[in-house]
Length: 178
Image 1 (cartoon, rainbow, N blue to C red):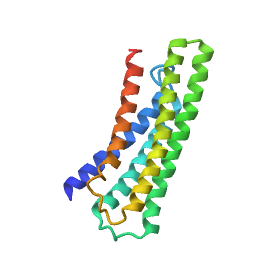
Image 2: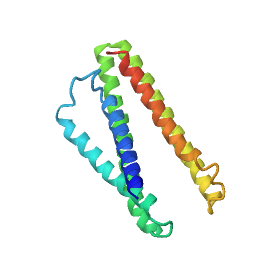
Image 3: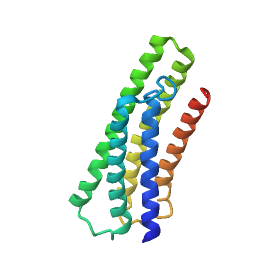
Image 4: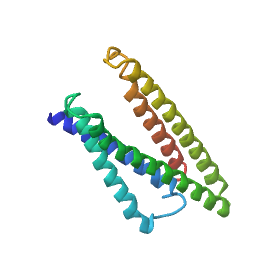
C-alpha cells in the first residue's frame, strides 16, 4: 500500500508540474517576460488544486476494489480533474495567443516562429488526446471484463509518451534562448 501511495503521489506531482510548465512557457516566462508578476499566486493555486484533485482520484482508483465506488461517487472525483484540465487548456491557449501578439508587436521574428511551432505542437497534441480518448472509450467498451489486459498497457503509455514529446518540444524551444 505504501508503494502504491508513493507511486500515485509521484504521478500526481508529475502531471501537475507538466501542466504548470506548459502554462508558464505559454505565458512567455523566461522568453518574453522575466517574471510572472502578480499572476504567480493564481498559477500556483491552480497547481495545488489540480494536485489535490488528481491525487484523490488516483488514490481511489488504485487503492480501492473495483466495486468500492459507484458511478456517481467516481464521477464526483473525475469531474473536478476534467474541469481543471479544461481550465489549463483554455488558459494555456489564451496565454499563447497573448504571447504571440506580444512577439508580433515587438517584431521578434525568431521567437515568434518558435512560439508558432510550439502552438502548433500543442494543438496537435490536443487533437491526438481527443482521438486517443475516443480509442480508450472504445477499448473499455469492447473489453468490459479486462480480457485484453495484455494490450491495456498501451493506454497509459500513450499519455507518458505524449507528455515526454511535449517536454522535448519545450526543452528545445527554451534551449535555443539560453
